[in-house]
Image 1 (spheres, rainbow, N blue to C red):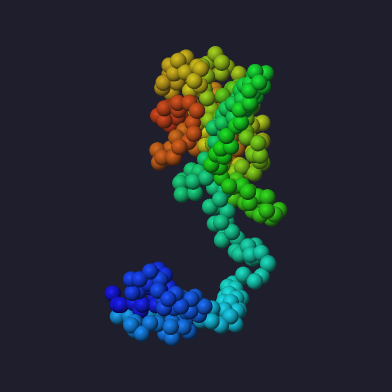
Image 2 (image 1 turned 120 degrees about the horizontal axis):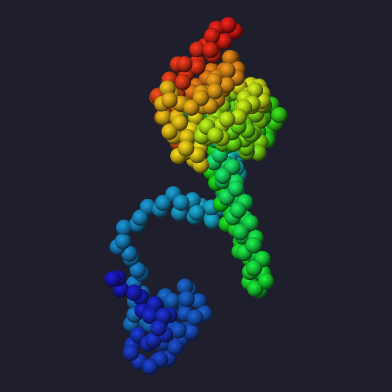
Amino acid sequence: MPQLPPWWYLCRDMACPCNLNRCLQCEELIMALRRNPQRNCQERLPPSFVAIPYQSNDIPLKETTAIARERQSSAHPSTKRYAIKSRRRRERTLARQLPGAASDKPFPFFELPREIRDQVYASLVIRQPGTKHSIIAAAPLLEHRKKRFAVQANRERENQRRLLAGKRPVQARLVEPEPIVDLNLLQASQQLNFEAKDCLYTHNWFALVLNRLPLTTFETPYGWDLSRITRLQVEVQIKDAAHMNSYVDWTAFFTSFPSLRFLRVIPTFHPRYHDWVLPELSEWSETHYVHKAFFRELLATVPSHLNLELGIQSDTADDLHLQAKPISGTLIKDMYAELGLSRVASIARC
């Protein structure tokens, strides 16, 4: 460590360098240092002390760019203002170079070809676009709605009891379920609504359940446009012969779907009548005549222009959202081999 000058000790510790208790010479020197340390430090030093300038042996380090810039800006205030103006000028230039950054006009989406627009719609309004059968089933949606309403009713009754007891009501947790398809774009414009709905009802299969036969009434979620559905899956829950011995008005059922092009009919066992109907539908040769008449009326009433599928196809690996156990595929094949000839003949005549 280098030796410090004696006046440094006088300024810091106010002590006497000659180990005396404030001699007169030291008192004068201290007073001079207090008045002007830089001017009088060399003039008022005692003759017995020599001021040795401090020499550092450290290697000077090169200042970084940020430190040099800060020193330069602090030394010259106009330089800092010039740097700010330069940075703003570069930002404006970059903003003008970006496409559409300086323009408030929307993207011309409808100037794109219809094929590209359909690809955009398919990624939003088609459920599972990579699968063969993208099915939107009505039964799970209706069941979820009923559960939600039941939970809401129970919460309201619980809150009434809590208010009577002087307690705070229970607040519901806001949990938004993941939507099956994204329909927010339908509210953008009229043309976008029409084109997106066309893609929605053309590429998705809509699944219904008929569990009140001989009535063909069914429930659908709010917003379904039955007149635009082109692909329909119908799960027909078969009851025993005593409850199926009645006429089914299939013509009124198909009238509700004027745009239908593809139809898949999957017969299943009704859960409530499974034990009674299973012996009657084990083999087609031993099937009850009531069930044979039921399938005959169904095949005769299906419009001839529809592409009909009966039962579950062997190459179908997707979830069909069935609510009951399906009937054997062998019985369906035997039934169509006997009763489907009339349908093939009617299609050939058309």
